[in-house]
Amino acid sequence: MSEATVLIVDDEPNIRDMVSIALDTAGFTCLQAENAGEAHALILDEKPDVVLLDWMMPGTSGLELLRRLRRDELTEEISVIMLTAKAEEDNAVQGLNSGADDYITKPFSPRELVARIKALMRRRDPQGGDQPIKVDQLVYDPVSHHASIAGKPVAMGPTEFKLLGFFLTHQERVYSREQILDHVWGSNTYVDERTVDVHIKRLRNALALEDQARFIQTVRGAGYRFSQKLVGE
View 1 (cartoon, rainbow, N blue to C red):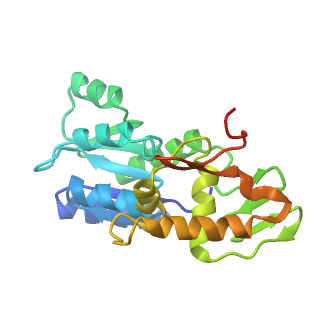
View 2: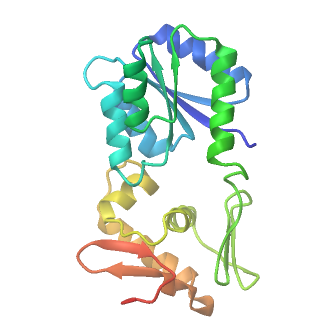
């Protein structure tokens, strides 16, 4: 299993630091957020593998953030473990019914938390998430940062490569320019939405060999999608 990134969301810095030390020792990369707003921005920008989400926080609660993540198709699949001081059964059920993958009650053993995260990742990604993606004659390899068409290397810039990776992992869905900006450039990057059009054009040019650019389709008035179906099917 490759190294994973875990976002720790808790308004208590001592708990964040304690969890971070335990996860660092176990080989995870850790991010920290003290409230739901900061956490949501980090989720969009950094795309962590797992979110450890405190149930009770000032302002927007962890439960509210969880529901927001599950309503958005771009974050609905992210793995979430709720951290809660509430041991009552109905609260645990409420969290699971809202989309949490697991929960752990404070105080908890760091060793148990590490074991829970590893078990969740095995369930979610039993074969690893860094496998090459192949569509027709196009092959995208996120580990070697290499793309090829019919065995021939494809030259493209880093932004086009990230854009291609986004499309390949979110096929058959239409995304607005704003959504693409958030998930490829990051929510804290302030650039014009037309920037997306420029990089889409560059990506299509890079994929012109063997007509592989046909998969990147413009949806008038909505945005773009990557689809292996012909337009109109």
